[in-house]
Length: 90
Image 1 (spheres, rainbow, N blue to C red):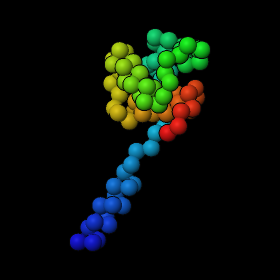
Image 2: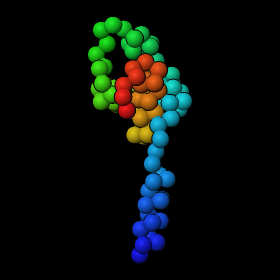
Image 3: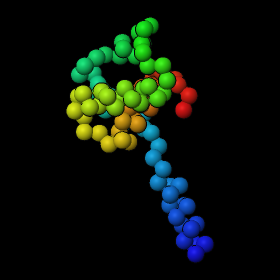
């Protein structure tokens, strides 16, 4: 029984998804730039003021452009945007 619990713990820990900013950039460049350039991320009056707001906006945009992304894909885009423009705490 203890061995089974240990296996489940180890398997669960190894299956945790890590955001991939490189993949996020590719997805961003293929989909997000259909509607806007990077100026929306750097303008003085930008309305994204937290990581939570960034996640919500990426998901709204994903729906608007009809991107067929998994949740992991959207997380990758959020990670790319955060690393490149926003620098919100994780």
